[in-house]
Image 1 (spheres, rainbow, N blue to C red):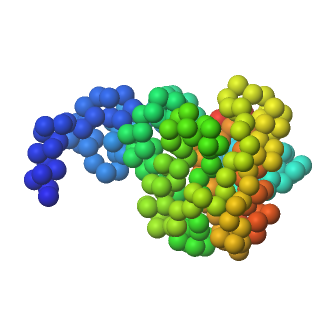
Image 2 (cartoon, rainbow, N blue to C red):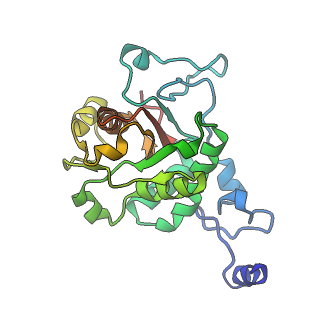
Length: 247
């Protein structure tokens, strides 16, 4: 098997999934996530302190994690949100290609980036106690795009963490405009009451990992979490690969 793998690498040398450069021998290892050293170095990690609920990073580099003003004023339906990286640079380019150019080969690298972060961020209780659910697309959007990028990421995450994957219990019942380009209040109204749990018996008393690609204002995740909580979910933790710094 090792010989076959080496032979394949000779015939089809591995390339960085973001920039396309051939990977050197020291770059071609599982922890590289099929990314070259330059692209890995240009991923901008989110550092503490952050809001303990929405995960928003504070401008200061000192101090402990604490609630932000928005979460103090109005607590979201989800219990917490975490993302490993800022939505910028090569990661932003990769996510946009993945999402809008149908470059689904990026699933492995982007999915393992998210799962590696999740394994390091120790869940309490263990991840195996959770049900992993992707943010659903409306069937019309799914037909237009051909795939749900959040489901592809969630599938990798569930396999890595050993959780059960559920992409049928919650649905997007109303077709909505794309959130990109909308203002904060427009985003909130756009997704209000857009989701529905169709199998509440599966959700009841469950702890949920809710997966999406990018966190911007959090309204989509919050509406999903609201539907899940109202259907009896006891905990909803949201995971995204990246987040913007929009309040």
